[in-house]
Image (cartoon, rainbow, N blue to C red; front, side, top):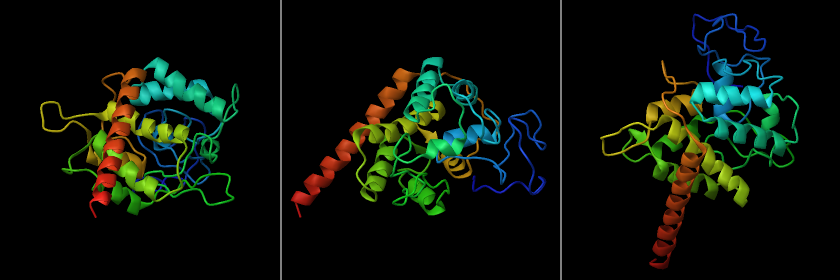
Length: 253
């Protein structure tokens, strides 16, 4: 479940049924996961549920519901939303079926080790941990040079660090890991006319730790498949450059 606590004005515990929340009504206001809700290791999907873009209880969700949620919540293009949703359901072997969010955390399918803010799946466990480690969140933010905005190079630095701490990722899951961050870099990139384009660090911390959108934010542009591929390649190139630099430094010692 989300690690976020409900605001003091909210009831301590209440029930979510589908997209309905007795506290927020039919709005897209934030409400953290309740004890009976289902959640995954994916902050993007959990945030969509916390804001009612998909079923707030995280249960009985179709691929088409996720497509609609990705478009409405993050401004993803139809091709990108279709690709993410339907390929994900195919990998999970849930084509033409509905899922609960916890099922997306089945280890070794879409889910992978070396998450930026979750621990690796313990040996023998079927599903990955969904608890967010505040210490890993702090380390992720510490990887941001300049401290104001996170860009592809900062993401690469964080991915290098986490992949050193985990079992080696295969090529497919390494690409998934880069792609996850490439999408949000495109969705939230700010700073035109400044020294550094990127995601405001405060937005990233809130999203990846509290699974919550920035206050008042709504998508103002479409994030497409080709742009996501381009950003993923930028992360990969930066990772390769970091590894080369480390190898050269090792030769000199």
